[in-house]
Image 1 (cartoon, helix red, strand yellow):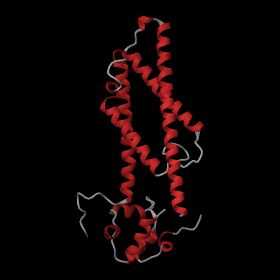
Image 2: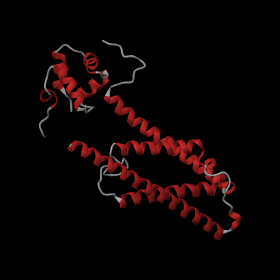
Image 3: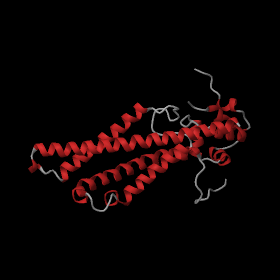
Image 4: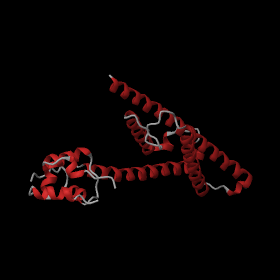
Length: 66
Length: 175
């Protein structure tokens, strides 16, 4: 499932995927895969992304049950 | 952007997870190859080897290293309180039936491979069907029995170590 909220939050901060990747200590490909829904990050990485983008876990990652 | 140092191992959890899966495939291919090599040596040299220089010429250095690597992996897993082989890695009761089937299956696989190698390398068709059935039956019985006993016993040992470690973790949490 695509994570458009994360993509929007990153773009809203004027960060590229590479910038965010460097900030949280992963590769650009990992950020790309999270945004396209092809990789399920650990809670530790989710938190690092949230801190970096100034958002909460709910705002970026919460999904209502289908 | 900070340039990553080329000698520093990656911290990327995705890459670590992916490479872990890739190395696991490589490890099992390597292990199967070494095991096949040991079995092939057994088929070729066993008739001359019996009673000579102990088990080392049969296993060789690569066989010893394989056993050491497998024991190390099992010990590391048991040290974390898990038994990696099985449906429930944290079972509190020894799943005897499951591990008996695993051990028996492994024993039968090894004996089939041993018999095939033996039939190719030292068929001795001139002995006649009676003697061949006896020899092949003895090989099957020995390989299956020995593998079953070693595998089941080792699994039980590591199960006990893992359970003891989990109990210790629980005691530490309760303190």
